[in-house]
Length: 109
Image (tube, rainbow, N blue to C red; front, side):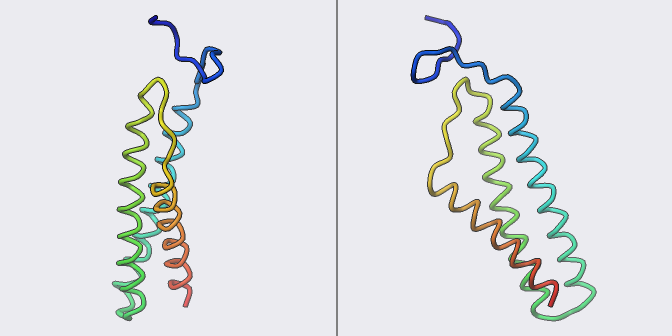
């Protein structure tokens, strides 16, 4: 009864270092986004243009959304069998990343 977690086909699951790698990937992603938003904020403060301020604000909102998702996913990694990301969570993460790419594009203008 209290054996190791199993895959759906009944074979024992050995996650190895996979949860730790996933945890580190989420942390790297949120750190990279935080640095990007900080650079956008720096540009917005140095050049008081409306586009730079909008880009920095959008970037900050996208970073917060990504941070919330990452925190939730990291919390789920402690389970023996973490659930997969749902469609809404995946689309939300994709939107956050695309917004951050757009912020980078706006900073180049």
